[in-house]
Image 1 (cartoon, rainbow, N blue to C red):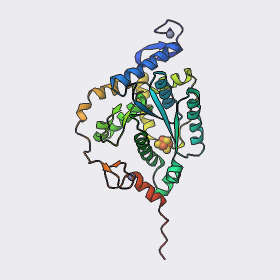
Image 2 (image 1 turned 120 degrees about the horizontal axis):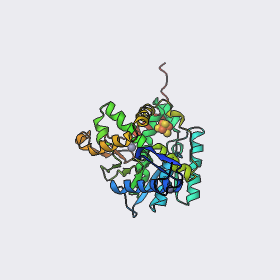
Image 3 (image 1 turned 180 degrees about the vertical axis):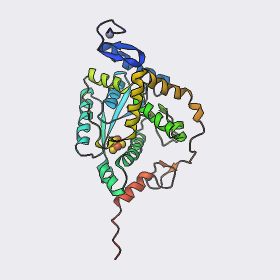
Image 4 (image 1 turned 90 degrees about the vertical axis):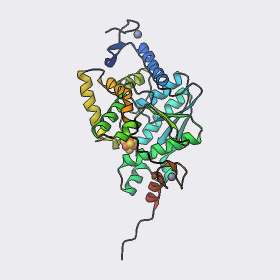
Length: 305
Ligand code: SF4
Ligand SMILES: [Zn+2]
Ligand SMILES: [Zn+2]
């Protein structure tokens, strides 16, 4: 197989575009795709301050690296979830890329913020770790970006993530979620920061190829709590279809973006206000993270005598 651009020996096949590239032409293709997504969705400009949230995995580290190479003003944020072993190893990968690129990385520890790690918070509040984790992450990303004066928060969600989320939302007709599933999610309140996903047309395989070619050291293991997640089942189903009909995932997600107006006015329309405890945005009087914090730190109930 020959590289589509320079006709040297190809090393990466991009089946969704029926193309193949050598290493250096693949890097150019990847960076061009990221740049095209940023411009097509009007995500940000070179003057904007971008907070890229990183987990130590191939997608977020590839995004961080790509944005630096494209000349954007990037600061990275890593949340230490306090998950035994996994968090230490993922934090290490983020620190290594920060050192290599000479770009700023902020580390926020959940244990320092809340007094308890994600698994401990989940145990104390009798919730599943992912529910606690997702809520805290959204809260802290926004809080950090707001206090730091960032214009936008960028995450490493790729095409596989977006197509799987879309499939899940459609299977359960979650029309409110469908209305809000966007690669460029506008801020619906002055205290909410816009969220963007510049990798939304690039597959997980392409992100992996980029990380390998650029010699980015990433954490290959999944979070121990990811096992059994329904999103994995949806990804496997979509991969099965993609195998038989390359390009389906991209057509599925791009088609959804073209038909997004179908879900207009499906948002829950709840009034947004400031949490009476922390000032972050919520729909009730007290935000869910403050409620979680209170529940987790409440003294244990005395057994009835
Ligand atoms: S798998 Fe669950 S606990 Fe682990 S990082 Fe993801 S959301 Fe958090
Ligand atoms: Zn080439
Ligand atoms: Zn609050």
